[in-house]
Length: 393
Ligand code: PMV
Image 1 (cartoon, helix red, strand yellow):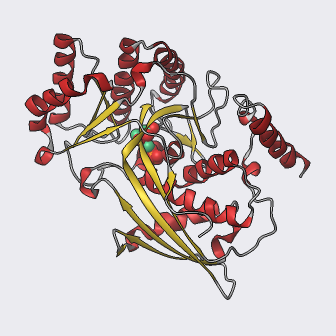
Image 2 (tube, rainbow, N blue to C red; image 1 turned 180 degrees about the vertical axis):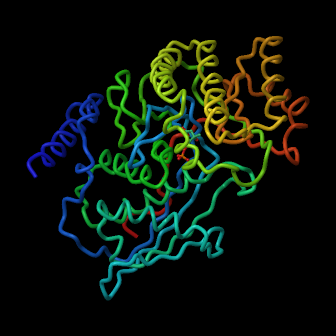
Image 3 (cartoon, rainbow, N blue to C red; image 1 turned 90 degrees about the vertical axis):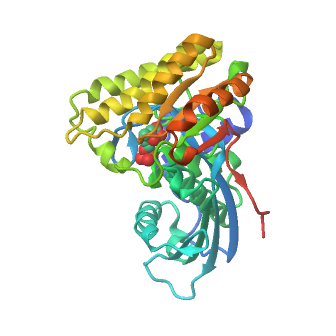
């Protein structure tokens, strides 16, 4: 008990008095830090609404340890336009039972296929949010990007749900500070989907213990608030939709394949080293180094899948054509356009805002032909999640 309180007091004190230093002790924080400090009690019936953004990793998380702990540190841009909006209405139950009670509606339609994922999330989160079994939750969720776009909604979706649950927890324990609220929301989101812990705050977020990131933790993501070079302000991400629809390989299957992977250990070490160099490049405005690392991370992610057992090939011929066209364009124009990939065929084009008109013209002239139904989504680095209804309500 003493240990937990020391963690919390240190966190609160440092948040208030040593701003900027507050997370230096985060590496010492354990799961127990997020256990509730109040007597279990039924919250008031209420509705909360949060919007949480998607994120795109620059240094990739691929491979994990139980429970949803990363095999290496990762860092991502928080996006602005691609987001999930989730409304949770909590109704106190008259009778206590141990079963979770919830409805899940996606775009106003009941979605039974989402039930197992939410049940599994509630199972993991129950210890930290004891009120989960004390009421009925109506969860209504929608994405600003179409389901058919092939963009994973698990990061923004789990982040939005975690934030709603944290707002309910704060109604029970109003002493929860803003820092604790964000850290625990990230911690809970991680239990639902690893990369979701990077979808709470903007604009550059790291997750995973790393010596170059003093505030880092395997348990939750932290916003990196250093003065980034001006090149990275409102950095652009245009997502070329090469393949609409569901991913061919779930990320859980993918992470699993990193166990006993022949190149696994080297890959985890490489990611740690890439993260250090990337932070330096982004601080100094070294776009050449930024591009080298970001593209290597994307290709390495796919190389890991191509060399796992069983092997997966998630790029399509159009993905490769886009990559080659980007390399040619960069060489001939000197415009610092680069790409990154998720676990799929779609291509994220990353570039400074100052290059927007040239890059969009290039996409229209040369790349749109590779996009399924000519579709692409324009996004940029954003500021993180937002509560959409007032408190209390
Ligand atoms: O959060 P998950 O389990 O869906 O894994 C995400 C993995 C990648 O998107 C490929 C990389 C990353 O760091 O976001």
